[in-house]
Structure formats: C-alpha cells, structure tokens
Image (cartoon, rainbow, N blue to C red; front, side, top):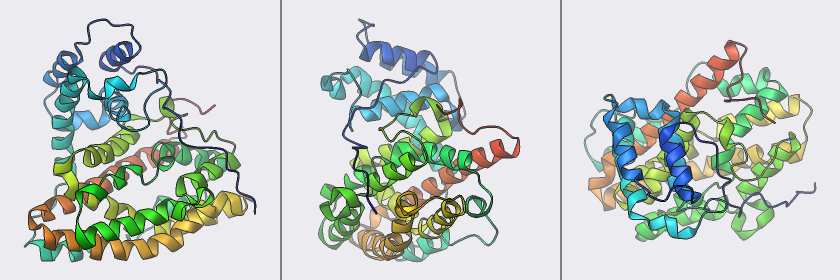
Length: 349
C-alpha cells in the first residue's frame, strides 16, 4: 500500500468568515483593517450581555474568536504577523472569554469529589468504560453512508490534522516517570519520527480517500460552535500551565475511548468499499490506543496524581470535560441526521 505524503500540516489556518461582531472585530484587527484594536473591550461587552456560563459553548461568535486567538500560538493564520501572538489587548480579551469558558467546562464536566490521588486511576477507568447500548460508532459501522462519513471527518479534521501537538505541550511541565509516560505515547502519535506513520498523516490520507481536502483547517467555516468548543477546550488546557492536570485528564479520555470506536469506523469504511489507505488511521488507533490507555491512565495520570496530589481533581475534570463535549458533538451530529439535515453549517464543497 502506498501512503500519499501530501503535506497535511505545516500550513497556516486560513482566515475564516466572521460569525458575529466579536469575531468580525478580531478578523479586522488581524487583517489590518481596524487601526484601534479594542478587542478586550468588545470581548467584555459580549460576556456582560450573557449570564449563564454555558452560553459560550454554543455561541458561534465567541467560539470562533477563541479558535482564532489560540491559533496565534499554534500554526498561525494566513497573512497574519506572528507578532500578534503576544499582543496585550488580544490576550486580555482572550482571558475574558476564557474565564467564562472554563467556568462552563467546569459545570458540564462536574464530577463528585473523590477521596484523593489514589482514586484517580479507578475513577478514570469508571468514567471511560464503554456504554452498554449502541452509540454513534455502531451506526457508523452498520448504517452510515459516505456523506455521513465525510461530515464526521470534517468535524474531526481541525484536531486530527494537528493530532498530538497540544497534548505535547504538557511534556516540559512534567517531571520524572509521568514525563516519560507522555513522551512514550506522543512518540507513537508522531509515528516514531516517520512522516508516513504520523497519525496526522494517516488522517489526511483518509480524508483524501473520501474525496475531501486534507489541508489544515480547510473546513473551518463549516463546523459549528460545539465542534470548536471541543477544539478550544484542549487548547485552553494545553496553553495554561495551571491546567496541566486537566490536559492530562483530557488525554486519558481520548486514549481510553478511541480503540473500540476506531474498530467500528474501520468496519464502516470497509463496508462502503474503501481500502487500507482509508482505514489505516482507524486501524492504527485500534492497536495503539489499547496500549496507550494503560500508559496514560496508570503511569501518566496515576503517577502525576501521586507526585502532585493537588492536581488530582483537575485530572478528573479534564477527562470529564472531554467526554461531555464529545457527547454534545455526538448529539448534535446524530440529531441533525435524524432530522434529515447536515450536521455542518453549510454543505461541504
């Protein structure tokens, strides 16, 4: 089998279309069309106009603004100077949005208090245990058509085309055995240094096999706020050292809930007549994540909780937030399909 090595990464995010006054203001500033930034004041005005923290998870304007702001620290935006990364006005506006977003995540990811660091490992296994009934992955294996597979790939592409990058930000913040555990997992995510084995490369190949573009953030304008919220939660955890525990918990949730669904996705693609090039991304996760889940839960999360007991609660929070956002996205997708609608903001082109 020949893997197409067309570069899926390393390019900047294209400037998206605005979804409201705040993102329009931000895009104008970054594009040089607005001389007076004033973004922090605009962000504060948006926050002041809403009371319930959870509004921000479903607000297209706020979530797109956060996505753009976080991208300044990652691959960057097309035609935007890297000097904007540390602009004080943008950072102040981001902090305003983040305060509400984190509060919302702590509400939707709320979990009962546990007894201490020794409870982290069993709690993670309990939280991520497979559900008894059929879920979205079962539908993908047995019933989904090609267009529905394309939609799911589009939703996932914003993260999967940069897979591992944000979790890797935890490496310099860890020490000892937990650091070694994260390095071991991330080395696999990056294909052991081989481009053709990088998980982002494999996902890009799957997208192309299904007739989609594999360029980074190509479909940004099509995905709704709930998709961006899932992406932004990871960026929030990864860019704040104080949220190291949440970042570790998030990775645990990802790794422990990936293997079985990946098997279903591979089965669905084969049912539709696709070959090894299309399924390899999912096939790889069936094998790799069954090993990774033991490392991240026991050695990384468990080890970190013993090493730094004050992070135990945030480890559980990060996992809970990841799972809750996945449920919200899954409910959005399946709800749209049950009504005969696309789960995207506009038809894929």
